[in-house]
Each structure stands twice: as C-alpha cells, then as structure tokens.
Length: 286
Ligand code: 13P
Image (cartoon, rainbow, N blue to C red):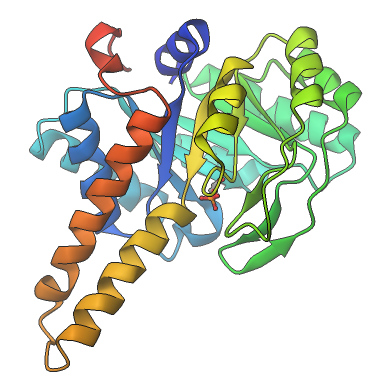
C-alpha cells in the first residue's frame, strides 16, 4: 500500500477502493484493474467481514484469485472501517495489506490513543493505516450516521501524534445515496492540505460529480472509496434479468449480466479517478 498511495499522492491521481460484497465483486475488481493496468484497493467493511467468511478466508481467497487470474497490477486488501483496535490487529495477523481504524465517533484523545496503538502494531508488520476524523454521514451496511465535518485542529493532532499513513477527513461526503447535491467543503480541504502532509482518503464517493472529484484529487485525495455505485449497478442488472426471465433459476445465468455491470462501472471509476494505465509506470506492490 505504501508504494500505491505515495505514487498517487505525488502525481496527483487517486487509487480507487472498491468494496467487495462477495466473490463476484472480487473477480470483477481484479480482472478490470488488470485490463485497465490500474493499481487497485479491495475493501472489506468490518461490519460484513464475518458474513463474507472472516479475515483468514478473505486473505486466502484474495491471494489465490490474484494468482489464478495472473494479476500483475498492484492490488491490495484493505480493512474498511475497522471497528476496534483488536479487529484491526486480527486483520493484520491474517495478512491484510492495510487497515482503517475508525475511531471517528470517539472523543479525539481516545481516537488518537487507539489509532496510535494500531499504527505501532501495523507498521511493525509492514501494514499501512488509515484513520478518520469527523463523521462521513449516510447509511453503510444498514447503519446510519449523521454527517459531522472534521475539525481541522483534531485532524492535525491525529496526524502528528499517531504517524498514520493516510487520513479520511469527513468534509461533506456521505455513504450510500445522496439526498440532494453533495456539498464538499473545499475551503476546509485546502487549509487542511496546507497543514498536513499525508494523503487524504475520500469516503462516500458514489454520487460525487467528476468536477468535484478532480478538485478533491488536486487537494491530495489519493484513495477514493466506492461501494454504493457498484451495488446499484449489480442490483439493477439482477432485477432486470429476473424481471425479463420469470422462469429463470440458474444462479450463474442470473449473475452473468451483473458481472458485466460491475466490470463496466469499475472501468468507469478507474478512468474517473485517473488511475487508468498508472500501474505501467509504478513500482510493484508488496
Ligand atoms: P459509497 O457508499 O459512496 O460508495 O462510499 C463507500 C465508502 O466510502 C466505503 O468506505
């Protein structure tokens, strides 16, 4: 992850993180990244990790699929919204490349203390850490949170006191579908960029316009997270094939159009974040 994020941050493009919700997602993310010669991050949200089979199974499947598909682009496995210090350590022990510790709902002193503990453990194992300040609003995996803008001083404190590798400052983005137009805090983004030197991570990117995305990338967002946009494409395709073929019951036939829908949206996002063809110029992942 170090190589991937540093390169993107320096050259001002972004590596997309696509969250996986099953094997179909993983296959599509890896194959499409390879086709586009783009570095890629596969995210697994902590809240559904156990439903997907647990950390160890996910690490094994990730490694085996990368090998079987002959993936040559940098592709890393990342824990999204790690709920506790212990969960982050479990993911690291299982072989994750990168973890996010999400202490954003805690008082800043506690967030800093816990993030620092995760960073110490992770760095000892060659794993990178992302942290969050403020609160990305909206609904993710059935859980609703209110939007709360990140406080600049808290962001600076967290970066300085933890040695974290990337920061997700909540600046107006939401998980899930936006109600109305997204309103990102670009002034806050600009002053936070001046005050800190770590790559930023943009959560809640589904529904953000290309123009806003490019602006966020120009302020050093080197990792951009997508889940909802993929899931809408997938579910629309499943709904369509079932509606049009009332007698259909063979799972592979039901899934086939949804795989194509995922491939298409993933390719669009890779181009949108400017990651297209970037792995050709990049050093290899760990
Ligand atoms: P979306 O719900 O906007 O796709 O965001 C996903 C995300 O930020 C995962 O951490």
